[in-house]
Image 1: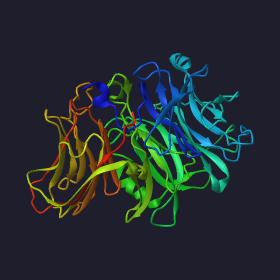
Image 2: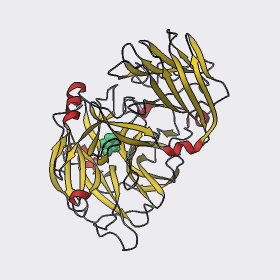
Image 3: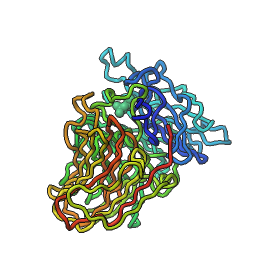
Image 4: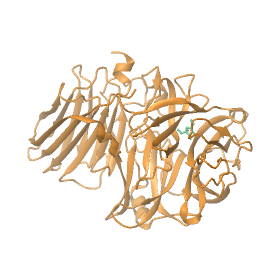
Length: 497
Ligand code: FRU
């Protein structure tokens, strides 16, 4: 095997070469999804940041384009967002097409080295050719550092109710909100979060947007707020908050607050490899679409690929569900993935005890597949799925219905010793009850598993590096009552990279 055949993902966006981290500036216009990303074109570790660029018609198959933004005398181009300025509020438009305005952090490495504190400032650039070429605004920065060391990652949204642009910005231990009428002048409006949620590290890469509930008529504002470190299973991760926004302050929903008091933090994904998740601007569908960086700052620079380093998660549709405990966000893979389903296997009423083989060898290619399993008659027991190969690597995942958690165990999944922090423990997502029935849907690529539990109520995303591809899926449990009522497996007919 070569690095390409063994590890280059089949359908998760991955740059051809070199280092990538956070997704940035995503927008949708004229049938095209744009994805920008933190990129260092001269090496496979983090370095002076640029914005790389990729486009897709369906969020699944991607084309990498020339670099969009280069560092300049104000600094590196750190994370940020982009908006389609439909009303030309910025005046950057030429009257024919709406300008795209990117809002990003200029990170000045010289000031940083000198030990100054104000080395992160917010700047803008615009494009009048749908994101192909960019012009940096002459009066950058547009939002100056007020004396806060970590002051970055602006995410901007149009607030229709108050006819204003709103920026969420990460500032040390909190989110700061600013408003603007023209994307050039920004006024501080409020702070959120220094006394609530997870604070094991610095807050980074916020996202803030309104969202309509699936099963009530309510609209709520959602704040996604990544932090590093301090994730539920170590390192970097994304938590979220649900509340209301009056044009100035973000106030938590009462039921959500109760959940937070119980759980301390509520996570978008419990796996170790979904960071800096943010949503597309102007995507026009009912629900927001998010994407995250499929790695973790604990080991991202050491993962065993040399040509490129890291991929994005699969894009996901976020859904706001009202449950008996209040609102909750569910994430599901975008529907467009189903257009690539082929070679379907369906099985029903599978009884299992010790080890039961569910998918073997060449029937479904487990390096590009979707497997959707419904379990019934569950009792208090552990249900362990194992992906394995002929040389003894294995990746375990499943439901522990006794201790009440979902898990992924990559301790014996292949290469793990490239980092002290990789594959040293079982990743867990706590559950609040024992389940009689459960649905586990997994999306497999060569080096990743994305596990969606009960329609995305819980999600676990993780990467792994087997020495040979996995080609077998088994299930085991000690109880005989439980069974799989249906199993649907689909090969994905995609070869993206
Ligand atoms: C998050 C982050 C951002 C920053 C960028 C730099 O992963 O640290 O806060 O803008 O990466 O590449």
